[in-house]
Structures are given as C-alpha cells and as structure tokens.
Length: 356
Ligand code: IPM
Ligand code: MG
Image (cartoon, rainbow, N blue to C red):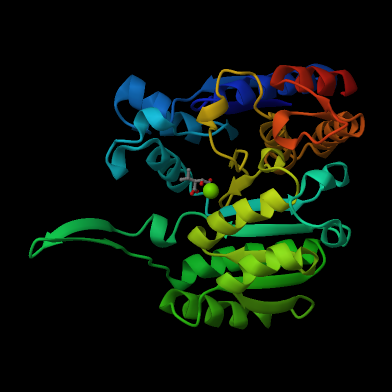
C-alpha cells in the first residue's frame, strides 16, 4: 500500500517522539511491504518561527493533500507571550477545523503492567479501566468568538460557546456507533443544570437514543463525572461530550491509567483522512533530554494505520510490541516505578523495534 503521510514534528520534546515514531512506521513499511511518503508540515511554534503564523494556508493545504497526518504536540514557553490568535495552539485548532475533524476519540485503558503507576488505589484499578471519550472537536467555546474589552475602565473578557443541533447530532452519532462496537453503554457528559448548550445536547441525544435501542444511554453532569472518573472509572464504556469538557476529562482519564504519556488519539471527520496525535502536550521541561515517552505518539501511528488505512494487522503488531516491552519491565521516566528498568526515549523504541 502507498500512502502520503503529513508529518508535523511539533515543538519542544515533540520532535523527539515524532522521530521515534517514524522509525516504527519505517519498520512497518519494510516488514509488510508498504510505502509511505512523508510530507513535512510546519504547525505551531515551528510555523510561527518560520512563517510568523501558526498554520499558514500552504501548510494546511499540504495536510489536505495527504491520506493522514501524524502530529506530536505544539506549544512552549517561547511563544507564551503571544496574543491568543497567534499562539501555537491556535494552529492546532485551525488545523482541526480546516481538516473538518469534528470527532476526537481518546481511549482511557489501563495497561495492567502500569497499574502501579496509577494514582488510584489498587482496589479501584482492579475493577478495570477501559472507556473511550468521544470529544467534539471543532465547536463550542474553543471556536466561539473571543473578546477582551475595557468598559468604563474595567477590563472584561467574553468567550462564546455556540453549538447547533447538526454539530451535536453528527458527534452524537459517533458516540452511539462507538458504543455499538463496544459494550453498548453511552454517557453524555454536560452541565445541563446551568448551560443552554448542554440542554440542547441532552435534547438531541435523547431523540437519537430512540434509534439505538440496544445502547444503554445515560447523562451525567461534568463535575460529577470528574469525580466518578477517579472514584469508579469501571462504570464507563463510552463518554460523549462537548469540546472543552472532553479536553479536561481526557487529561484526567489518561492519568488514572498510569501515564498520560501512553494515550494516543484519533481525530476524524466524514472521510478516512484523520489526524493522529498523543493527547499529552509538548513537555518543554524535558525537551532535548531523550527522556520523553514516545509510546503515545507511536500508538497514535498505530491508530492511523487502523482507522485511516484499514491496516489492522500492522496496527496490532505495534500494540503487541508495546505490550511486550512493558511486560519486560521497561519504563520511561514518566511511568517508572521501583523495581522496573528505566529506558530512554530512543532506547524504548529500539526495544519495540526488536519485537516487531
Ligand atoms: C488537547 C490540547 C489542545 C486542546 C490545546 C493544545 C489547544 O489540550 O489536544 O487536548 O485543547 O484541544
Ligand atoms: Mg488537552
């Protein structure tokens, strides 16, 4: 199979994890007889440095001409002082919008090998943690109008949080269909006791629930959900939620599985062209030290093979190799616990490549 892959090397320690991920993709191509053409794309801080814009049109255009895009992470202290619409993060939001990627899947699954690294008590992790957050990715408050003004000498800011029923319905469909492929339980997370947008989400999803009689559908307030994720995470199968709640809850959900450095994600729109990225940030504090965990990015590449290219065997091979490395006790610093063997970023990739 021949595919064109957009590669966004990103900022700070992102460059290290993307480099390791390409080694894994090369090994897969070699072993299974595929051919990848990598197209370098600048986005985030890197694009600001080169072009003065976190996502110039020509870079978005490159992504639209690829079969899928792989990303590490963007942002860092160097660009923190910039105005909101010129920051690296704005490039990421514009990329998601420009590629039409409204649906973001963030699996929270505990690797039994990493249960000791979870901040939760064993009595809770023993129940198992295996759910998916379906996060709406191109609407809501991250894409509403942002304003900062001064009124009568008092500074004020407003962020709008718009949603229309069509945006809700298309992500609701992903939620129900994801649940149908799993344990048939869907939880809508919202703040319907306060927000109009949440009340609209509820009304649309209750309507849709009638078309999915096999799915056990329920609703939960976001504050309660944040608490339930650490108290009783095994109750969840699929969570569907709006953009900001999904952003916040997915960080929490990843950490209870042992390390945020292990969680990949996929973002898709109507077709198969997706964006694949770890859910963690660019970890500027550890950049250049070769200690960042590359596995979330490598597992994101596995998701790309599965969801954009339909290469199930190759995707599973990467996941199984990851598991084998963990089984042997190898850990990067973020997931290290006593008695384990510490590995550097490139070293854990070497080990993984040996298993492939
Ligand atoms: C994420 C990140 C981004 C988001 C930031 C960097 C804009 O936190 O992918 O979760 O909020 O979506
Ligand atoms: Mg986030």
